[in-house]
Picture (tube, rainbow, N blue to C red):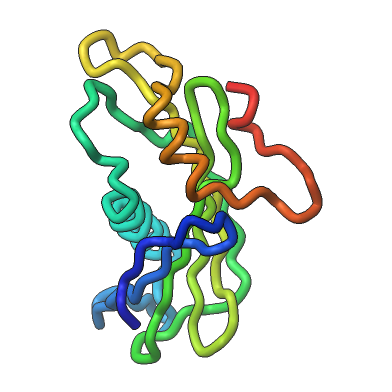
Length: 153
């Protein structure tokens, strides 16, 4: 599966294939749970770059918090597909939703609250108009209408 930038409709997440290594497995033959978080990081970076979010705009982005649910074991061998999208936008933060899929089933769901800080002062800064527009272009709000914790920050 090839990487793709989401089309302008906010119903299409970034999607790409993530490579697994033999050493990612644990003693039970599953991909280790901590390694899965590294794979979500890889997907997050690749999605952000595809969206143009890594432009040099004088800010840095940090993970403030993450919540992760493991739905099914990930096995070495079958293709692993990552999906990433923005699920909430706050004043100085946003939430990225990640999913890892294998053989037609979701194996992991994770939300990362990202805070945007000034590169010089390391203090949170409000989104620029350009950054907010970029985030809104890939925003997929939860179907139940609930708001994420980053929405208020």
